Image: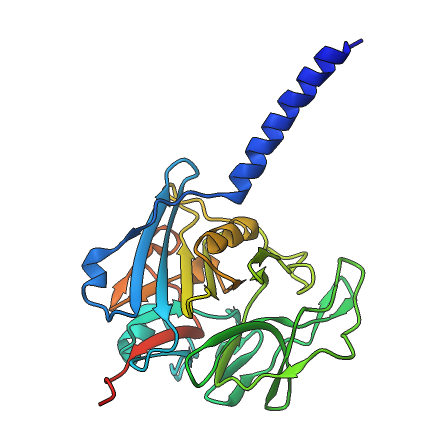
Length: 317
């Protein structure tokens, strides 16, 4: 039998181990530093940072972009490759003359031409509809997945989105789905979403400055999405700045992150809202013509269907 003192000591030891592991899960020190060689070539409203954690190990980069500057514009873009509707992020950047380009939403890699898996809305026109229903093991789940939209003034918004014909509607939260427990779509709560461009992926990571990962609600269970992968995330802070994060993975120098770790990183960058974009071999970031990360450990980029691009515009006189 344990004495009371021994039980107290044992409990304290267990608590210390638990506390240490919890703290580690809630904080990832990336030692962020500005990439001066590239920042010197960028306008004031765009800044690139690099970070690494050798213990995990992780390598990552993020870009901070001012949303409402008159000389910057962030748009959702679609490949114009006539053969298969996909191209590399470097190709997007070169063809469009964009200062920053990052991979966008999910797509069917087996389809020729590619088909977008979820909402794609460009210049006020519906290119691909939102995902309204997902079937898992013969069970049907009503679904609204996370999307980021860009308004005419340059500001961004993350919401759970559905569409009716060409009109978009934003929900404050997705249906409360759980494995084998589909939830009904809320009868009320959606508002008209008058964005210029929008793109869905998911799941959501941060809502109102709190980590809130909606992978079950968005029916990403029984999929590889929640596991450890190279990652791309997007969000924004209270300073009207867009935050784009890319984390390398599947390589000795960087193992990748799961959704919880990705959310922790975005929260540490100051995101008040954030969501996951397509990842894995699709994760790629190009800034001023430079491929910043090492997609899946090399320099060969996957061709993707959609991207998010920031352009430098002529200064208004």
